[in-house]
Image (cartoon, rainbow, N blue to C red):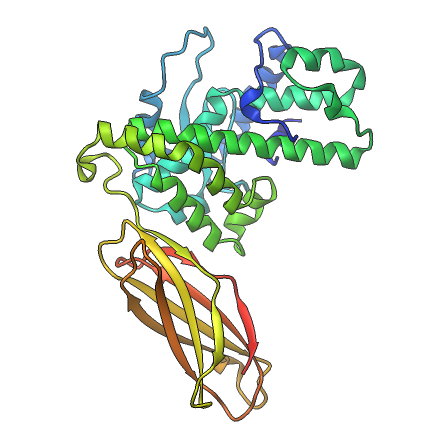
Length: 366
């Protein structure tokens, strides 16, 4: 059950779930978590022992948590794992783990670290492990419907008896908890001095990694990025107001100025008026951009006759003044005598070369 919780989602909102301390027996879970933490610590190191902002960001977020009246306060610790496949996860006793690959992706960006770690901290403070455990326990025995009522669930969640249907219900339930952690992280970040836009920046960064191992496990148990971004927008404005009240000079806040956000439209391609070129373009808009952004176009000629494989992909680049109003990056590709299928893909970067967004690949016939 513990491993299932790590890899994890009902149609119910996680915010409506209230889990009383007496609802289930904590002792077996606590024992299993302690054993798991001990095992994971063998193959991990404390975040404060490595270079970068991770440890300091984590400590700051934890300090801004409301005081707990519980006798069992979390034993907070952030560790970097060497081999675990999940990119970030937490245990209910206060341990948060980020794998080495994810740590390298976030680098020295305190705001991105805050977005990732605040999400995991909220999983712990909102007792999402216990809620998952209770949900799984209820699914094992439909006779436990009476216990479900105590937990705030509707008995109809157990209407499906097949294993596959129950797996789907559990996946939906876990995704609701992920959305709950997203929303909860906004206030914690604002209080701690990290602009809420870093949450969206993290979503966009992870979206650019969708074909990599960093995102593979993450996306299997989390809602898609568009849904997550839409969900936090309901709480986003209030979090920004709180941040601006606490940190009127954002450049002096722990996370610094709000990050540049790029929102990419759907790439377009059509033959030029002179018939000798192909015009391709990418509509986009930006927030928080004070300097032009770089747009890189990669175009790959797929299965072009008589063309070496190492010449299939070519790159074009330009800078674009990108504001909240719509901007457009346009490129003219020379057409070749041999026709064939071409795949286009755009990348948008800030002035430092930090990746802000990647378009979906688009194919057309040259």
